[in-house]
Image (cartoon, rainbow, N blue to C red; front, top):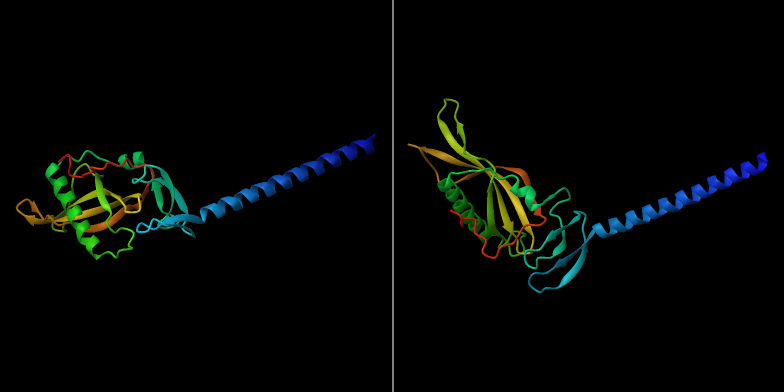
Amino acid sequence: MRHSIRISVMALVAMFAVSTTADAQSIIGLGKRLLKKKDKVEVTDPKTGETTVKKTDKGVCEVRSWKTGEMVTVEKFYASMKVMTADEIWGWEKNFRDKEGKKEMIEFLLDNEKFENRKRAADHRYKDRKLVQCIFRNDDWNILRNNDGTISCRRMWVAEIYELADGTTMFDSNEWDSYYQGAGKYSNNFAYVRGSNNYGLIKDWEHKADADPLKDL
């Protein structure tokens, strides 16, 4: 009787080992397939329309193409790049009510983008991108002062939303300074301070053909 029980137990252990090994191999195989999928991405030449598959060590992500409205798999700019939803981006917005200040800031960004675009190579990732929205992340100017207490500049934190020529949509979140000129006036030029939350792709931004960041001003 004891011999029979011992054999049954050993059989169960063997079955469990085989099952566990098979499951482990299945999981490993799945992991390899996923990794294989993640290190490749389809790339379409905007000039010829020809699509090729290339390997990437930056990783890929799924985002909505503003050109087709469909979800597409694209290569990240860098491995740890953020991919955020439109709701997350809009969650940054604060009720900044200085309309003249908003207009001045957006006009600067539009002009600056034109200036920078002229210097970009034809194959640059940002070539001919379009500024479609500005999201102000402070509800008022941050006034900075020198050691003697005099005003040096005012600072604003804004997320710029761009539609890129390849069909993706990105955010670029930065702080900008406008230097004080005296008598309550500030320069209409802005100096880049630093990037905040860096930059990345937006997964599901709503495309509008007539998008204009100055529209409501």
